[in-house]
Image (tube, rainbow, N blue to C red; front, side, top):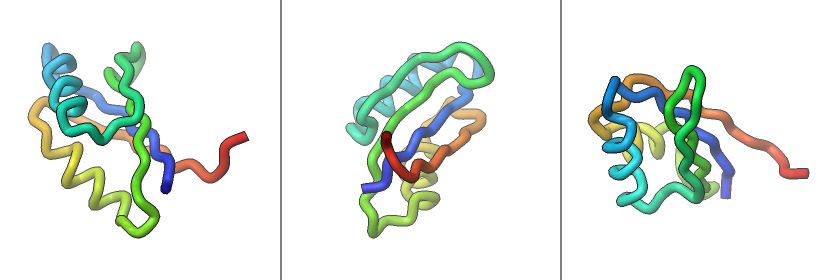
Length: 78
């Protein structure tokens, strides 16, 4: 599995709705509300044989209320 962190900026007033939709999809290992440039931070595991960009586009970014995303790929846990 590939460990991926995705930060999401939501349209004003939509953060909780976006978080609920994400949690309903059961793809996030962890989901946090954050301060700063982004509103949500999620940790997910993408199967090795799946295209990460396609996975995110099809399973996350189609949720209404998301304005922008930032994806961080990981290499190794210490």
